[in-house]
Amino acid sequence: MTRNIFIIAFLITSTLFAQNTLSRIHVKGNNFVDDKGNTVVFRGLNTSDPHKLDNQGYWTLEYFKEMKNWGANLVRFPIHPPNWRERGHDAYFELLDKGIKWAEELGMHVIIDWHSIGNLRTEMYQSDIYDTTQKETFDFWRKIAVRYGNNTTVAFYEIFNEPTTYNHTLGTINWEQWADINKEIITIIRANGGKGVPLVAGFNWAYDLTPLKTNPLTIEGIAFVSHPYPQKREKPWEAKWDNDWGFIKETHPLILTEIGFCGPEDPGAHSPVISDESYGDAITNYCDQKGISYMIWVFDKEWAPRLFIDDDYTPSRHGKYFKKKLKSYKY
Image (cartoon, rainbow, N blue to C red; front, side):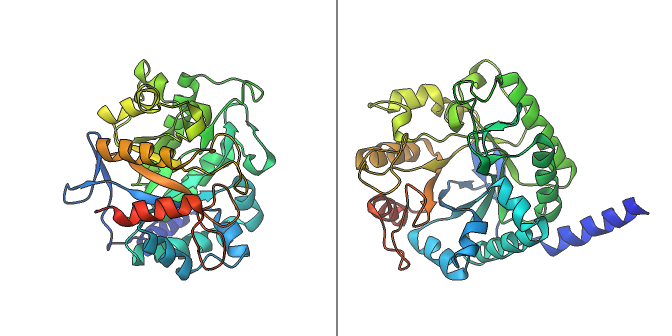
């Protein structure tokens, strides 16, 4: 009886949240494609945590319209595990339902991001806001797959934001162990109806994909993530990017789900994001040349590098650069 109730609930939920106005995004070779087989390259924006935005009165249609006005065709929702618990799953789903609906109405796809930083194997994290467990992570993705598996607006599942051992202060994990955890989560997602593209992050705070050179992750229909902030390497960047993560675009789709910069004098300036417009030119030109998708961090007036500075969405220095860049892009 319980099993039948679960199946009925699954079917109702899957039907309720299926969307047809945006194409399903698929993996084909090293590209993302739509239902017609056309290659799709994404240029998008990160929101801050929907829980935070809603508490501050920003989780609104107007906020989404502003992201669209800046030129985004993809938005990323970073969900911190403690906020997922504090708000309660049902109440948090109400936030996500609204955001996904607004994104769909405006023609923007969505990444759902489990926004933790640390070592999921040892369950040790960089700070309390990232605390989770393997069980909670598995369950989060099970619930996401059930609710949004047929929703074509929800294009991507970013399994874990930034894996790091923080110089082994958070314990150890090797690539084989990380691959096994990702395989487990992808299996759970797909078994529960998740049709979106799983995104797998590299080590070193999601920067380093070099282990894939010798230990490829052989799962069909996935893509990879890097966060190549400017201070991860010294100038000139391009050859180092080729070696550290850019090479993966030869075989798989790649999304830089966080890029951005701020000056040392800007609010919240911290390593590894301090730089200037030369970084913006380098990273966007690199992505344009290779057909790599990217997401700019972060559409918020508090988190750094912030893209706007007030309630009128006045761009920051970094915001001015990327707003102009996004609006110039021809999709």
